[in-house]
Amino acid sequence: MSKLVTLQEAIRQFVQDGDSIYAAGFTHLIPFAAGHEIIRQGRKNLTLARATPDLIYDQMVAAGCTKKVIFSYMGNPGVGSLRIVRTAIEKGELEWEEYSHFGMISRLQAGAAGLPFMPMNQTAATDLEAANPLIKRVQDPYSGREVITVPALNPDVAIVHVQRADANGNAHLWGIVGEQKEVAFAAKKVILTAEEIVDESVIRSDPNRTLIPGFIVSAVCHVPYAAHPSYAQGYYDRDNAFYLAWDKISESPEATREYLEEWVYGVKDREEYWQKLGLEKHAELAVPENLSKPVNYGKY
Picture 1 (cartoon, one colour):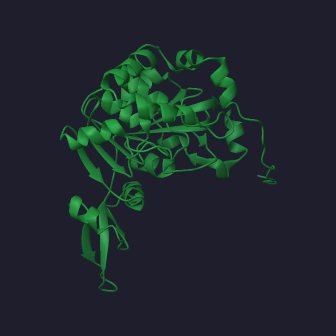
Picture 2 (cartoon, rainbow, N blue to C red):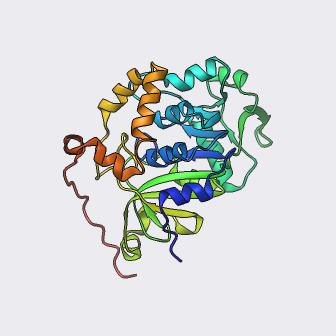
């Protein structure tokens, strides 16, 4: 049965006030369109988890969607702090938990495996242990030495953007791969957005590229350009100018509100957003074709 729905319907059906949300992607394939739709639908009291929170969480906090953030390294990549999230934390307006990158991924691995926690080797980040009581030390029953443990993370909803998927949610992604697979298996529900919806035969032609299988996916949404201002390998480039611009926008609550009014509330969907960016920006972000060498899977 096809799981294809609009992004609006997927958010309406699967994201509720008070949910824990994990918008996956490491610098690449970040699901901005879904975040914007959550803002437009006025969701509140969300817990936003993510390794390396990107600008989308700054925007969701600014829009009043968020009660808590769970993260490892929080910043505007290559620019500086996420001003809005940092200010809200410093003012005591936002709950927070911080982990190392490996700690966050270990939490997802535990969640995906159905385990209560995941052990890790000790690190030099002892200040994180002091700041986060959920990071604990236990004795390894085999060697007797101390190891660090982090609790499983099972988000209510994982949002994953991919290059292509079929109507059942079997999905290909390539380029920089982050924690998409782990969070998809750890989450209770998965919303998949895709640059392209393709026939199942395309997915079956390269099974090793299928990182997200359809049986764990709740909804599939065809949303081209959903990752802007991040990028989708082979489809469009990263909009570095916007990351620099956001640093200035987010200095001012008034400028931030104006941005949200114009670029989130002021457009009905991602297609209207993309058209509003204009042809000059489209051309700037266009990427040339650079095909990989085909793989011979032989008879199957």
